[in-house]
Image 1 (cartoon, rainbow, N blue to C red):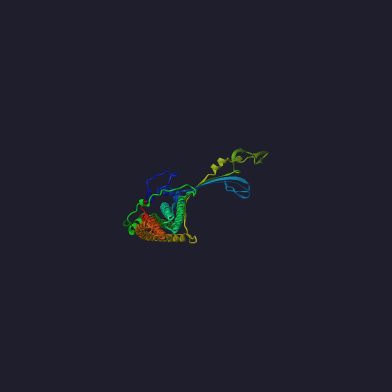
Image 2 (cartoon, rainbow, N blue to C red; image 1 turned 90 degrees about the horizontal axis):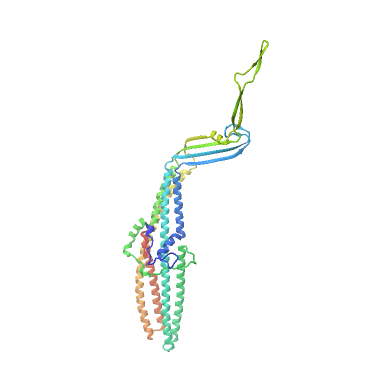
Amino acid sequence: MIRYAVLFVSLFISSISFGQGKWDLRKCVEYAWTNNITVRQADLQKRFAKLEVDQSKMAQYPGANFSSNLGYSAGRNQDPTSFGLTTIGYLFNSYTLQASVDLFSWFTKKNTIAAKELDLKATELGFEKAKDDIALNVAVAYLQILLAREQVALAKAQIADTRSQLESTRKQVDAGKLPELNAANLESVLASDSSTLITAEVSAQQALLQMKALLNLDAATPFDVETPPVDLIPVEKIADLLPDAVYALAMANMPQQKVDELNVKSALKSVEVARGNMYPTVSLFGSLGSTFNNKAQEIKSKTQYTVPIGSVTVGASTYQVYPLSPFTSYTLGKIGYFDQLNQNFRQSIGLGISVPILNGGVLKTAWQRSKLVVKQRELIREQNSFTLKQDIYKAYNDAVSAMQKFNANKKTVEASQKAYDFAVKRYELGLLSSYDLVTSQTTLTRAKSQLLYSQYDYVFKMKLLEFYRGQGLKL
């Protein structure tokens, strides 16, 4: 995978544990992958996307809710157990368990899961892109540190050379062979060289601070990097990095291009979801419940008895009249809590259908908007591909130009060095003024400085071109 290929091969030989000694480039990159805030934010986005996938999958399962109510009711209302009207205040307690499951919803849930999974893959690649980007930024910062230190070393060498010339000149001035003006000119050059050294050292410190920021290290934390020669950095042949070939590899391997493709596919699935929401859905539902009323009563016992309901007189005799059936007397009492829950237990099951008819055009607008999102993401994909190609061709032209400039500066340094060597010999023989010597020295210093810049610029431009292939970057 690109995320592992982009691991910059160790710049050099040492492998030192974190927190000790100097850091090489591999160590810097690996630390940045773990601690850089941008990378950590991309990791959080990946986790959010994973939660979205999990939630969309759980939405396939039946939904269930349990509820319970406890309260007191007074005034004219309906008894929740007998459903008759009552005016007696009572304490009630009810329990309800409801469940439902979608039987058919035009594959909206299936397409939602597919869209979320594509989004997850896109955010995972986005995380890898963030790692690639920070790795490239760390590599650039590393090269800037190396360049700044090369400038420091060049400035120190220049000071040593100027000081040596000044000492030699001072001896000749003291001996009366050279005028005081020669020594004064060299003292001025030495002061200028010292100023250049201070500037170079400040630039080197600033480059280290920039690296600390990328690594999310505290600015006060002791930190230093390995500083091997730039000549040891491997550079591929420009003939192996032709822009058409690099672009073809970039389209197949760069995370951003894969992200764009996944985003388009996700948008297409979202169109299916939006369309499915406009059609009827069928669901199955059911519920269980029971209720308690502290005023509810039941028959606890009954007694039968017979009493006369009158009398009749027949002749001289009076007879008692009794009913054909005995009277029954009932004794009432409160129903127990669990007995009442058992008696009032109820169940229901059914089939439901939901048909969207008029909803203010919300569903249709959402469907049309989802189709526009597809077009939008296709344009983003096209724009990113176009920009990538432009960047690759620009990187190639910059690399060719940097290589030519580097080769030209090497020749310039060689010529300037010869001129300076001759100037020193003539100066030592008294055939050249100190002004001309200083001019020759300045020309050589400028040539060396330009060579350093062009060399690092060449290495960076070549590495950037390698990076665009999406197959890793070796330093």
